[in-house]
Image (tube, rainbow, N blue to C red; front, side, top):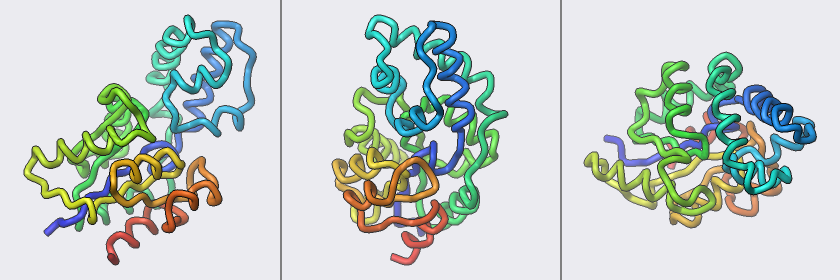
Length: 218
């Protein structure tokens, strides 16, 4: 019997799409003659929405949606070829599926997330997928997690918040878990730093597999 819920973030948690993300931003910057930024200046904000990222990069408000659409058009042409599963991620999904109901909660679109998970042949393990287009408020707001749990409940999956977990690599994931009153598990294979993650969770692991094994032991 599966009595636990595990929600996974995408970028930095299950997949590495850094090259696809960076190339897509550079494409937009060049097209609109925006000063180019080094990779480390962009990756530090992965996990935020595209709108927020362009805002952080100083793009004028009247140009943000145009930039977002240009980014998405380029990203969808390269994301499969320039994305990899993180080490142990596929194994963690398969192990987790044996004792928990699984979901995705991400600020990527659920459409592109589903395409990538299908590409890596793991999409079938997830009961729900919540992306940017499915919510008004993104992480760290509780809405994406609450929506995921509500959809699971509508599929006759029993929800016990004491047995529900969010695994992610940034403080946005852990803050969202706290706001939704479930347990946040931080991992270090992505974009967050241990010191930052430890502000919001006592449970920090190297990767998603170690996080899943911890949850299994509870």
